[in-house]
Image 1 (tube, rainbow over the protein chains, first blue to last red):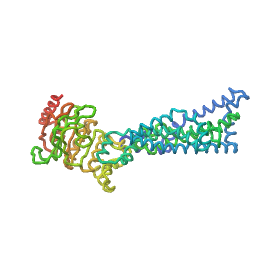
Image 2 (image 1 turned 30 degrees about the vertical axis):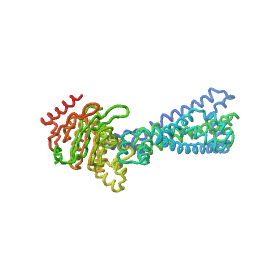
Image 3 (image 1 turned 180 degrees about the vertical axis):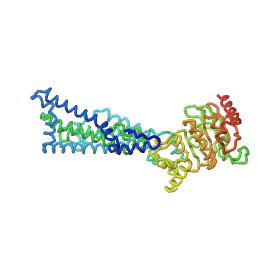
Image 4 (image 1 turned 30 degrees about the horizontal axis):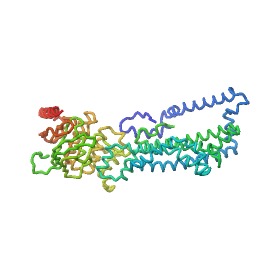
Length: 293
Length: 252
């Protein structure tokens, strides 16, 4: 998000922050806005055109249910109040599961990473199992969790936690361990306690990495909640169960609508953590934000 | 202004007696180093890279224990400046300069006052609210100096502090550091790979050999303070710098 302000020197970064905030009203801001949003909007319009093309030109009317045209999707999924309520209830359930799981994963992941950074033996004993959550097919274990813990929130949240905890642990640990030796030396020289070192040196240094992990995990939490849902197939329906149900009933309009909603959830969550990262570390860390949406 | 350091009735601030430092991997960084730094001295140490100059400072600061000989440092008020300014990028200049006083547990008002004074001293008053990434290399180094000045160190350890700067910035910082040396009255142990810088700054220049590091030569620098930048083009300056360089080469 570099905005050329024509300034240089010490004022530049300060001005950059201000310019980003006022980009839409500054002179030439309109053109910049168009340059930012124009191309993706054009791709969106083109995609919808292709979508219509496939529906009306490629498929004959009997097979049109495979790719229902966009306005049918909107009509059936979103404009029918009953269907919309069903979708939103399911979306709310999946969102709740995703966020509960993500919150637990964040707290647990940070605590684990801090413990690992403080004692080598903790890292040696636990890190392999953190890696394991990445290598075992957690979704394949969903039926087993349902078997053990039932098909309610507990199992679903558990799946999300296992699904998304690793990036938080790995990135936080990496961040905590990437403090320069000389910074450590300075804190040692001035008699800093381990706690002071953690709060004033290691955690701030790790913040950009932590946000990288958060962003990845947030995306995974949404995927874990929705895909886990389709594997549960039972209990109160989340958006994944709805998709599964629509598919078996050949209700393709509703299915596409549900998929659009769950994608939107993923995008909003990803965008939110990017926004948060820029707010927290954007002022001092170059790589903050990374991908802009 | 600074008394010559030849007379022996003053107790040295730093005394190395046959100090050796061997690392667990078997490399010997220092081998029988004898060194006395008198209060008020500005002692530079030059030597080939990897000769243990940095280890000398780490040992003097207490960060690294010695493995042979004895070390006596008569003060706990030590400032340590690295080649990298080692600022915390998330803190403003003001908050960076407050750091050491903060770690030492000084009350908030006191550390704010000291930081503001130190920032003025290095001429960065108008940049107190800036973050390090918006500053030039020379300015960052001034912040690093200011941060140590808040604790009014009696002994200042410099590990090639201006080595990463361009020549113009380096010479300007040389002048500014000498100014601070005259006003703040600290004792300095200054490691550099530049003979010119060593001679220009110091009351004494030590030449170290390649690894394992030993002291090969000890040159008194006769020029009085304050020193003008023009001193660098003086004949006597060139002769002394030449002698130091020759000793440096002889030690390989």
